[in-house]
Amino acid sequence: MEYINPWVEYWNRDKIWSKSKFWRKQMEVFVRLTTGIMDYNANDKILDFGCGSGNFAEITADRVGSVVCADMSESYISMCSSKFAEVPNVTVARVNPDLSDLTNVGTGFTKVICFSVMHYFTDLDYVARFLSGIQRIAVPGTKLLVGDIGNNNRTWIDNFRALSFTLREGMFLDALILITRIWLSDSHYRKIKQRGDSYLSIPDAYLLELGKELGLKVTVLENQFTVNANYRNVLVEY
Image (cartoon, rainbow, N blue to C red):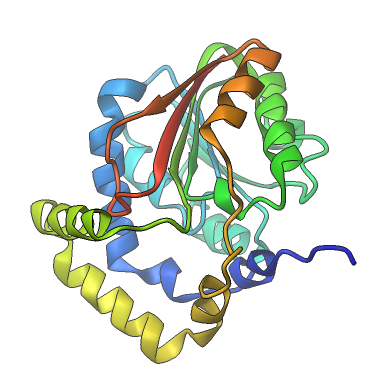
């Protein structure tokens, strides 16, 4: 039986995340904490792959050359098209669901952000198509930051680090509100999350070997950029 990814349908509708103050704050923190690695600047043409409601572009548009917001979700594409209609250096593009060709989102990218997206991919072949697809639309020297790669392994230490992060970054109240809203009004999200295989398992070794195969430098970062202390962040250099 063909596997049907439950997240595709979930993210294709306007959910509580699109107007979440927590998720907006998290992106602000992510941009600040990754600036030293990514050096966002006026010469950059940035692809935000899996842009969601466009938080990254809202935060960085005034400091970079241009941003392309790209997503598979028709709901988020519509939302971003309206939001950035009057912003000259932000454009919006829909991603082909099978990743057969990424050139439709543009070429000549100097930086690529893929934030909290990769663990929703269907399988490891999809990961390979993504990295090779980016290779065809990026310039030499491009940095791809794959942030917040989810997994189902969480310990009490991870929970403690998550709590500390929200307190340190002034996100605790917003996180509490979001969690409450999930439990009160988003049973669909809870149902998918409670499945043991809700996230794609992406071993570090797979990404490192894939990088060698494609001639890329892949670095698994030790930094905690998000509230999810057990999630990973990976830098790919083209």
